Image 1 (cartoon, rainbow, N blue to C red):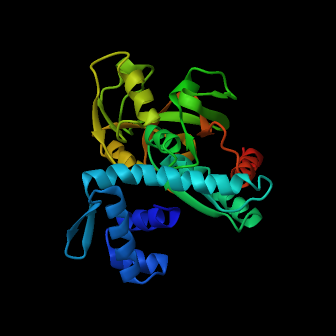
Image 2: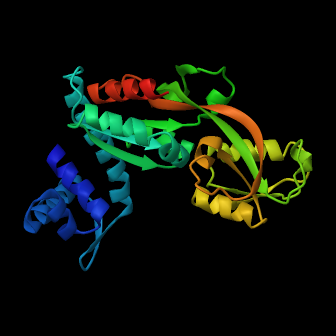
Length: 292
């Protein structure tokens, strides 16, 4: 078992196809098939269920994929750590959807101009999913609203859970969005619509809204949606309330006629694993610092 075999295994797992994996890796199909079979023989388990040309991971395969991703990430980090002043290799960045839309386009463009040799990969998710991704080495760093930061002073920078480090880079004002014809609201008990449109569990903004709304009046129900456009549509229809950062609403060319109530301001943190300090990452931190 070597790193090349792990890269081939991960690619087949992602593509669910030897044909597509071979094309992506620029290898012949027979080579990819042979390497997968050799890896399975070495490990003594079947990593894939073969259904025609479709390759689906078995339970042992899914378990091994997590280890393969960690090993490959650690190997890449080790290579980059030998040249700490050189921004090269890859940087896998996670971000909340709202931050990616309203805060990142400018800094990412500046970073690409300054470090064109870095392969930057950006993915979005809830804060908890992103933190889990950093800790499991699926991500190198992430922009999140971390629950620990909500209890800290502005400008929070400290060690977080389980060896995670965080630095505040942006400040967001969170707004409770209500239907436009909703009566004025001074507190949670005045909110008549008791359904909250929000992301899946693990979203810090959703948790903030639930905690605030449940402080007074009947407990709210949650309607899970997959985007802020969906949240705004549910609120505009009068069926739900929602929570979103003001910076995201400012992107709307013609924002819907909603009633908006400021709830609180929170720090957006750049989080990373303790000890992670590649040249590509340090340059990214500098770029974010210049933009904040």
